[in-house]
Length: 323
Image 1 (cartoon, helix red, strand yellow):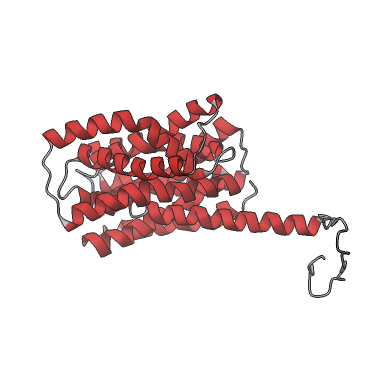
Image 2 (cartoon, one colour):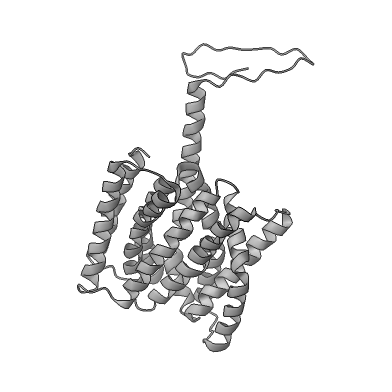
Protein backbone atom coordinates (compact mmCIF):
# COMPACT_ATOMS: atom_id res chain seq x y z
CA UNK A 1 0.00 0.00 0.00
CA UNK A 2 1.27 3.47 -0.80
CA UNK A 3 0.25 6.53 1.22
CA UNK A 4 -1.23 9.59 -0.42
CA UNK A 5 1.42 11.88 -1.83
CA UNK A 6 -0.98 14.82 -1.68
CA UNK A 7 -4.64 15.56 -1.33
CA UNK A 8 -5.15 15.34 -5.08
CA UNK A 9 -2.62 12.68 -6.00
CA UNK A 10 -3.89 9.30 -7.23
CA UNK A 11 -3.76 6.59 -4.63
CA UNK A 12 -2.45 3.16 -5.47
CA UNK A 13 -3.59 0.38 -3.15
CA UNK A 14 -2.23 -3.13 -3.37
CA UNK A 15 -3.90 -5.99 -1.52
CA UNK A 16 -1.37 -8.68 -0.72
CA UNK A 17 -2.18 -12.35 -0.78
CA UNK A 18 -1.24 -14.29 2.34
CA UNK A 19 2.12 -15.90 1.80
CA UNK A 20 2.90 -13.85 -1.28
CA UNK A 21 6.07 -11.74 -1.30
CA UNK A 22 5.53 -8.08 -0.54
CA UNK A 23 7.01 -5.70 -3.08
CA UNK A 24 8.20 -2.47 -1.50
CA UNK A 25 6.69 0.72 -2.81
CA UNK A 26 8.90 2.49 -5.33
CA UNK A 27 10.84 5.49 -4.08
CA UNK A 28 9.63 8.44 -6.11
CA UNK A 29 11.42 11.79 -6.23
CA UNK A 30 8.63 13.25 -4.12
CA UNK A 31 8.93 10.65 -1.37
CA UNK A 32 12.71 10.97 -1.42
CA UNK A 33 12.41 14.74 -1.04
CA UNK A 34 9.91 14.31 1.80
CA UNK A 35 12.23 11.90 3.59
CA UNK A 36 15.14 14.28 3.13
CA UNK A 37 13.08 17.20 4.44
CA UNK A 38 12.08 15.19 7.51
CA UNK A 39 15.72 14.27 8.15
CA UNK A 40 16.83 17.89 7.87
CA UNK A 41 14.04 19.04 10.16
CA UNK A 42 14.90 16.42 12.76
CA UNK A 43 18.58 17.27 12.50
CA UNK A 44 17.91 20.99 12.94
CA UNK A 45 15.76 20.25 16.01
CA UNK A 46 18.48 18.10 17.58
CA UNK A 47 21.13 20.74 16.89
CA UNK A 48 18.85 23.40 18.40
CA UNK A 49 18.39 21.26 21.52
CA UNK A 50 22.16 21.02 21.79
CA UNK A 51 22.45 24.80 21.55
CA UNK A 52 19.81 25.21 24.26
CA UNK A 53 21.82 22.91 26.54
CA UNK A 54 25.07 24.75 25.79
CA UNK A 55 23.47 28.13 26.50
CA UNK A 56 23.30 27.16 30.18
CA UNK A 57 26.98 26.23 30.34
CA UNK A 58 28.35 29.63 31.37
CA UNK A 59 25.70 30.32 34.05
CA UNK A 60 26.18 26.79 35.39
CA UNK A 61 29.95 27.35 35.46
CA UNK A 62 29.48 30.60 37.39
CA UNK A 63 27.36 28.72 39.91
CA UNK A 64 29.93 25.93 40.25
CA UNK A 65 32.74 28.44 40.77
CA UNK A 66 30.91 29.78 43.84
CA UNK A 67 32.09 26.73 45.79
CA UNK A 68 34.89 25.14 43.73
CA UNK A 69 38.12 26.08 42.03
CA UNK A 70 38.27 26.18 38.20
CA UNK A 71 40.33 23.00 37.83
CA UNK A 72 38.00 21.13 40.20
CA UNK A 73 34.97 22.22 38.19
CA UNK A 74 36.41 21.18 34.83
CA UNK A 75 37.83 17.84 35.89
CA UNK A 76 34.90 16.75 38.05
CA UNK A 77 32.39 17.57 35.30
CA UNK A 78 34.32 15.33 32.91
CA UNK A 79 34.68 12.50 35.41
CA UNK A 80 30.95 12.56 36.21
CA UNK A 81 30.03 12.69 32.52
CA UNK A 82 32.35 9.74 31.87
CA UNK A 83 30.53 7.69 34.50
CA UNK A 84 27.27 8.20 32.57
CA UNK A 85 28.78 7.72 29.13
CA UNK A 86 30.98 4.78 30.14
CA UNK A 87 28.04 3.09 31.82
CA UNK A 88 25.98 3.41 28.65
CA UNK A 89 28.82 2.07 26.48
CA UNK A 90 29.21 -0.92 28.79
CA UNK A 91 25.47 -1.56 29.15
CA UNK A 92 24.98 -1.68 25.38
CA UNK A 93 28.23 -3.60 24.87
CA UNK A 94 29.44 -1.14 22.29
CA UNK A 95 32.50 -2.31 20.41
CA UNK A 96 35.66 -0.24 20.35
CA UNK A 97 35.79 2.23 17.45
CA UNK A 98 37.86 1.34 14.42
CA UNK A 99 41.51 2.33 14.57
CA UNK A 100 41.04 5.01 11.90
CA UNK A 101 38.54 6.86 14.13
CA UNK A 102 40.72 7.21 17.23
CA UNK A 103 42.63 10.25 15.99
CA UNK A 104 39.35 12.11 15.51
CA UNK A 105 38.13 10.99 18.94
CA UNK A 106 41.37 12.35 20.42
CA UNK A 107 40.65 15.74 18.83
CA UNK A 108 37.14 15.69 20.33
CA UNK A 109 38.60 14.82 23.74
CA UNK A 110 41.18 17.60 23.54
CA UNK A 111 38.70 20.16 22.23
CA UNK A 112 35.33 19.69 23.91
CA UNK A 113 36.20 17.51 26.92
CA UNK A 114 39.35 19.30 28.12
CA UNK A 115 40.29 22.43 26.16
CA UNK A 116 37.06 24.39 25.83
CA UNK A 117 35.75 23.73 29.37
CA UNK A 118 39.09 24.61 30.98
CA UNK A 119 39.77 27.77 28.96
CA UNK A 120 36.25 29.15 29.35
CA UNK A 121 36.15 28.35 33.08
CA UNK A 122 39.42 30.21 33.60
CA UNK A 123 38.08 33.11 31.49
CA UNK A 124 34.94 33.37 33.62
CA UNK A 125 37.08 34.25 36.63
CA UNK A 126 37.65 37.68 35.07
CA UNK A 127 34.79 37.97 32.54
CA UNK A 128 31.05 38.11 33.09
CA UNK A 129 28.90 35.38 31.57
CA UNK A 130 27.17 37.90 29.31
CA UNK A 131 30.50 39.15 27.91
CA UNK A 132 31.84 35.61 27.43
CA UNK A 133 28.60 34.51 25.75
CA UNK A 134 28.82 37.15 23.04
CA UNK A 135 32.52 36.53 22.42
CA UNK A 136 31.79 32.84 21.94
CA UNK A 137 29.33 33.93 19.27
CA UNK A 138 32.37 33.64 16.98
CA UNK A 139 32.24 29.85 17.37
CA UNK A 140 29.84 29.23 14.44
CA UNK A 141 32.13 31.00 11.96
CA UNK A 142 35.20 29.28 13.40
CA UNK A 143 33.53 25.87 13.15
CA UNK A 144 32.40 26.52 9.57
CA UNK A 145 35.96 27.46 8.63
CA UNK A 146 37.36 24.30 10.24
CA UNK A 147 34.72 22.24 8.45
CA UNK A 148 35.61 23.74 5.08
CA UNK A 149 39.26 22.83 5.59
CA UNK A 150 38.75 19.41 7.18
CA UNK A 151 35.79 18.00 5.22
CA UNK A 152 35.93 19.98 1.98
CA UNK A 153 32.50 21.54 2.58
CA UNK A 154 31.87 24.54 0.34
CA UNK A 155 29.02 26.72 1.63
CA UNK A 156 27.71 29.47 -0.65
CA UNK A 157 28.94 33.05 -0.74
CA UNK A 158 25.73 34.18 0.97
CA UNK A 159 26.46 31.80 3.83
CA UNK A 160 29.96 33.21 4.34
CA UNK A 161 28.80 36.83 4.12
CA UNK A 162 26.14 36.29 6.78
CA UNK A 163 28.63 34.42 8.98
CA UNK A 164 31.21 37.19 8.64
CA UNK A 165 28.63 39.85 9.53
CA UNK A 166 27.89 38.00 12.74
CA UNK A 167 31.61 37.65 13.45
CA UNK A 168 32.25 41.37 12.92
CA UNK A 169 29.45 42.24 15.35
CA UNK A 170 30.89 39.90 17.97
CA UNK A 171 34.44 41.21 17.60
CA UNK A 172 33.21 44.79 17.77
CA UNK A 173 31.31 44.05 20.97
CA UNK A 174 34.32 42.35 22.57
CA UNK A 175 36.67 45.23 21.73
CA UNK A 176 34.16 47.85 22.91
CA UNK A 177 33.62 46.07 26.23
CA UNK A 178 37.33 45.61 26.85
CA UNK A 179 38.14 49.28 26.24
CA UNK A 180 39.81 48.68 22.89
CA UNK A 181 42.35 46.11 24.10
CA UNK A 182 41.48 42.42 24.53
CA UNK A 183 41.91 41.34 28.13
CA UNK A 184 43.22 38.05 29.52
CA UNK A 185 39.70 36.65 29.56
CA UNK A 186 39.22 37.48 25.86
CA UNK A 187 42.48 35.76 24.93
CA UNK A 188 41.39 32.63 26.80
CA UNK A 189 38.00 32.74 25.09
CA UNK A 190 39.52 33.10 21.62
CA UNK A 191 41.80 30.12 22.31
CA UNK A 192 38.73 28.19 23.47
CA UNK A 193 37.03 28.94 20.15
CA UNK A 194 39.82 27.30 18.18
CA UNK A 195 40.01 24.07 20.16
CA UNK A 196 36.22 23.77 20.38
CA UNK A 197 35.73 24.32 16.63
CA UNK A 198 38.22 21.54 15.94
CA UNK A 199 36.37 19.24 18.35
CA UNK A 200 32.99 20.09 16.83
CA UNK A 201 34.24 19.46 13.31
CA UNK A 202 35.77 16.09 14.11
CA UNK A 203 32.77 15.07 16.20
CA UNK A 204 30.33 15.99 13.43
CA UNK A 205 32.39 14.03 10.93
CA UNK A 206 32.59 10.97 13.21
CA UNK A 207 28.84 11.11 13.89
CA UNK A 208 28.33 10.00 10.29
CA UNK A 209 30.02 6.70 11.16
CA UNK A 210 28.76 6.09 14.71
CA UNK A 211 25.95 7.43 16.93
CA UNK A 212 26.61 10.86 18.44
CA UNK A 213 26.46 9.56 22.01
CA UNK A 214 29.25 7.10 21.21
CA UNK A 215 31.43 9.88 19.79
CA UNK A 216 31.34 11.94 22.97
CA UNK A 217 31.30 8.78 25.10
CA UNK A 218 34.57 7.44 23.73
CA UNK A 219 36.12 10.92 23.90
CA UNK A 220 35.26 11.10 27.60
CA UNK A 221 36.65 7.62 28.20
CA UNK A 222 39.86 8.47 26.34
CA UNK A 223 40.38 11.57 28.51
CA UNK A 224 39.54 9.73 31.77
CA UNK A 225 43.13 9.07 32.94
CA UNK A 226 43.88 12.80 32.64
CA UNK A 227 40.63 13.98 34.22
CA UNK A 228 40.82 11.57 37.18
CA UNK A 229 44.44 12.49 37.98
CA UNK A 230 43.78 16.23 37.62
CA UNK A 231 40.56 15.99 39.65
CA UNK A 232 42.40 14.32 42.53
CA UNK A 233 45.11 17.00 42.42
CA UNK A 234 42.59 19.84 42.20
CA UNK A 235 40.53 18.55 45.11
CA UNK A 236 43.66 18.45 47.27
CA UNK A 237 44.77 21.99 46.43
CA UNK A 238 41.67 24.07 45.68
CA UNK A 239 38.97 25.08 48.18
CA UNK A 240 35.73 23.12 48.11
CA UNK A 241 32.43 24.41 49.49
CA UNK A 242 29.34 22.42 48.56
CA UNK A 243 26.26 24.58 48.13
CA UNK A 244 23.04 24.18 46.18
CA UNK A 245 24.41 26.44 43.45
CA UNK A 246 27.84 24.83 43.19
CA UNK A 247 26.49 21.27 43.14
CA UNK A 248 23.62 22.11 40.80
CA UNK A 249 25.96 23.93 38.42
CA UNK A 250 28.42 21.04 38.41
CA UNK A 251 25.71 18.44 37.74
CA UNK A 252 24.34 20.41 34.80
CA UNK A 253 27.83 20.83 33.36
CA UNK A 254 28.48 17.09 33.61
CA UNK A 255 25.20 15.65 32.42
CA UNK A 256 23.58 18.48 30.45
CA UNK A 257 26.43 20.32 28.73
CA UNK A 258 29.15 17.68 28.59
CA UNK A 259 27.09 14.64 27.60
CA UNK A 260 23.40 15.04 26.70
CA UNK A 261 23.90 18.35 24.89
CA UNK A 262 26.80 16.91 22.90
CA UNK A 263 24.75 13.84 21.96
CA UNK A 264 22.00 15.98 20.43
CA UNK A 265 24.54 18.36 18.88
CA UNK A 266 26.58 15.71 17.07
CA UNK A 267 23.48 13.91 15.79
CA UNK A 268 22.16 17.20 14.45
CA UNK A 269 25.48 17.99 12.77
CA UNK A 270 25.54 14.59 11.10
CA UNK A 271 22.02 15.14 9.71
CA UNK A 272 22.22 18.71 8.36
CA UNK A 273 25.94 19.25 7.95
CA UNK A 274 28.59 20.78 10.17
CA UNK A 275 28.49 24.27 8.63
CA UNK A 276 24.73 24.77 8.82
CA UNK A 277 24.42 23.24 12.27
CA UNK A 278 27.20 25.48 13.55
CA UNK A 279 25.31 28.61 12.50
CA UNK A 280 22.38 27.67 14.73
CA UNK A 281 24.79 28.38 17.56
CA UNK A 282 24.52 32.06 16.74
CA UNK A 283 21.43 31.93 18.97
CA UNK A 284 23.48 30.75 21.94
CA UNK A 285 24.72 34.19 23.06
CA UNK A 286 21.16 35.54 23.22
CA UNK A 287 19.98 32.56 25.25
CA UNK A 288 22.94 32.82 27.61
CA UNK A 289 22.27 36.53 28.12
CA UNK A 290 18.73 35.65 29.20
CA UNK A 291 20.01 32.99 31.63
CA UNK A 292 22.64 35.38 33.05
CA UNK A 293 19.88 37.79 34.01
CA UNK A 294 17.43 35.19 35.33
CA UNK A 295 19.91 32.96 37.18
CA UNK A 296 22.81 35.23 38.07
CA UNK A 297 21.18 38.64 38.37
CA UNK A 298 23.72 40.21 36.04
CA UNK A 299 23.08 43.63 34.58
CA UNK A 300 23.63 43.53 30.87
CA UNK A 301 25.83 46.11 29.16
CA UNK A 302 23.69 48.20 26.78
CA UNK A 303 25.42 46.80 23.70
CA UNK A 304 25.00 43.13 24.65
CA UNK A 305 21.36 42.55 23.61
CA UNK A 306 21.85 44.48 20.36
CA UNK A 307 24.96 42.45 19.52
CA UNK A 308 23.24 39.17 20.32
CA UNK A 309 20.17 40.06 18.26
CA UNK A 310 22.36 41.09 15.33
CA UNK A 311 24.08 37.72 15.16
CA UNK A 312 20.77 35.96 15.74
CA UNK A 313 19.41 37.66 12.61
CA UNK A 314 22.16 35.97 10.59
CA UNK A 315 20.77 32.50 11.37
CA UNK A 316 17.87 32.83 8.93
CA UNK A 317 20.27 33.80 6.16
CA UNK A 318 22.76 30.99 6.81
CA UNK A 319 20.02 28.36 7.07
CA UNK A 320 18.42 29.44 3.81
CA UNK A 321 21.73 29.71 1.98
CA UNK A 322 22.75 26.89 -0.28
CA UNK A 323 25.02 24.46 1.56
